[in-house]
Length: 488
Image (cartoon, rainbow, N blue to C red):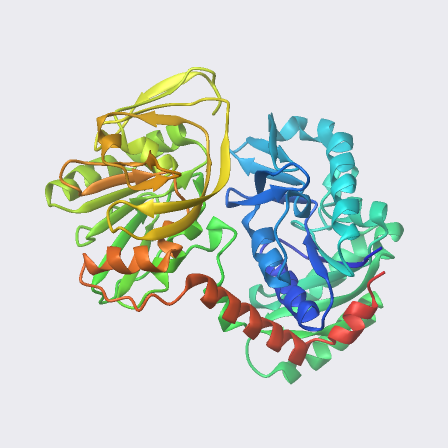
């Protein structure tokens, strides 16, 4: 049975996802069968993964998809058995082992603990069966002791599965010594004993300047240091997991400016990453309260976990008026998944699948209507672009069926069937296909329409190169031998 080590953080966004991915690549390059595992993730950035033994697909966090890629392994739903997809400030959809399980509010989530923990431990055993080493990622921080009795993501899992923990501190945000020493102080004896050591992440400058800091942390906690990781520039080439890290973008000269309204429940925003990484292209995520820039040639309405609610959010910010003006100027509009649904004439949710039963008038840029249905489409897609006559790959994760006259001008053919819709003048189109711009031939042909030359360098190739670069840095700056030896 596989050995395991778990990375937990002193807080959210300390870099656990990247460190796990990098260490997975390090272990893989050493010839180990390594697998990622995250008991519980909270993210609207989802990926498609296989459900072993069933020949079907389910959802996991996009981060675990990336970590599986770092391992050279096929992603499965057992790598992230519990996925919470926030739908409002108080509620979320719960995905268990790839499938939609329930919708629940934060106050009642603790009631599911035993059921969810059972699913987590079942998936844990499945992942361990096929590995020499499992690298586990925590969520948030074990210092949230007010949540300890219902925790399945950090110490609740580590103590149940007897997995040693390495604590990660982010020095870039300041106070890292206090964060690590404070975590040590407030943990219970049993939780504290699971911790084997710590890692300092995101250090800028001369690493030796923190030698006294390492000694202080060890003096306060008794934990050993596994090393200090410098600021990793290659991280910029990896898909982001959390919308809070999206850079709204400063103005710069570019051949193509793309505006993306930052919806309140934005999902799968890494659809834009291949465009953000293209020379001559500027992607601006426009925050609430700001207008869509008039000099943007293209506006992309991204995916969302709550289409009707975010359509109202879009209108409250006046972005519907900006879109109408953009359309009148001859600008191009693209809707992805939930954004596609918004572009139509009407959205109906008669069963209240997104909350309460309701309907909404769409933006009306496409002559289509959407009805929310309980059957969720989750699948990898091999398609053919009708616009450019090129093949492409992507994936679908959505509820809802969209029909109407503009569907007679599909964006692509999937298994010979039309997908998506295009306006009569070709200036507006919507699709359920995620990953569209990751297809090199499609992206290159699309950008040509805006006068941008894209060499068509593979997006996945860029991710692979970034993972290799991160792994090399971790080998250089961490005691990876000791880290892997701590696994049990």
